[in-house]
Length: 567
Image (tube, rainbow, N blue to C red; front, side):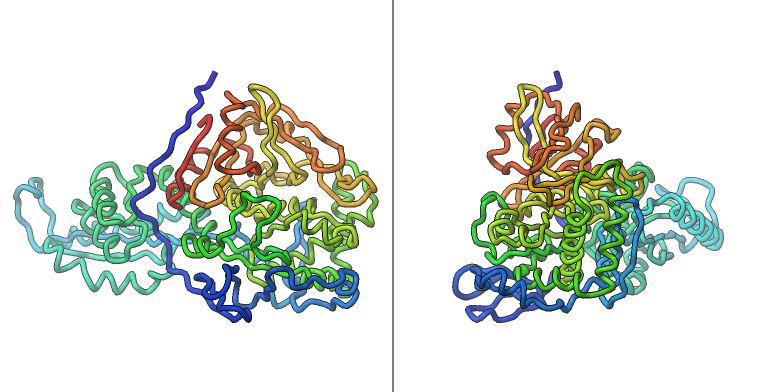
């Protein structure tokens, strides 16, 4: 049996994060800003354009505001809507959700080539061989620079946006010749640079690498097996992220993790609720949104249900959006292996999804969550004949984190897993089965769980509610292909994460109503794993494949305390 491990990893000594700035507005009680709240009781920071009423001020008769709600100002315009068959449709508009898609995020890499050109010819402790003239060294440096740039373009992963490479000559008087001239060249796009990739011609390349990292204090890497270790050690000693990949494979692995961090830090959440951040049913969910903003740059926008209702009604009243809803519904039904739900209810859920997408585009958000109990209790789900399940499934297959039950912990864990794996995530309750098996599931599988660029998984459509409405996708979770699964959850303080692995050996609840679909996971010690939930909560996000090490690396970069199970 595989040994069960429980360990806490040390936090990294540094974390690169660009400064975060935000706007503010008055809420009639005190000042809400994206940096925090001053005045009255603790409140929720929101984006400048969002309208928030905390404490349920919109407690009007639901049928009254449903009837009076007009077309929202943020019709989904220009947003690409993925159907289950992988087709996309465009609705013209000034605002596009696709521009916010985390899948589009690239890591901006700035190649810097330092070429040492000696001021003359001599021999000594560092020049013991046959010497070249300065002109020969300069020519060789230029030639090597061209070769390195070409190789870099070919071998770096598609996660990279390569910025304009910089070539800089310096002499044996390094302190005098590696300075302002080089800094001026790099300053032109330093705000856009996520990683400096430094190369050196001949020896002493570590000096140039160290100076660049020290000056700009951003992640800095140098390929090699010797002097790059020296550069990385120096940079880390002064609180700068220094990296020393030995080859392009390691470099691309580093780039993947750094890009995932960038995706995570760009997370922006839309949260429809009339309750603000007051304690809700899932009490372990992250509620300190000021802290998320301060530490990670993550924004959370509270959207009152009145605004969501306006968007739902707007989908029906706007001819273009109504036609789009019909088209997506037809494609979803046609592409399904089996459809055990009336088409009109699928259409209701598609309209709901378009409305939420519109809110996301309006508020510049790339993820969403909905607290199911509030949505159910205010009777809007019943009035609209809609459940969030289909919306979550569709959004995740497009690359947007979308979580059940207002669970921001699961949403953030999902964002990390999807950014690392490039696969749609599953999520659900982590429940016991027996000594060597646990159950993980909700009704939110996604057709892209094999990968965003992989063929869609086969699915069925059926009803969530026994009376026949509430569309949910059904995918046989043990027939995805990959058997290893990585699952994780961030704790209520967003300062710790539990990362675990298991083997998918079964699927239960297929074709049953309600939240019934679960993956059966084989683990070494189910009781120990389930005991760990006490610090984290019960919803876990999951992707197929072994990404535990990458998740641990990413978590350390985010200064999360890492605990692992079966890793």
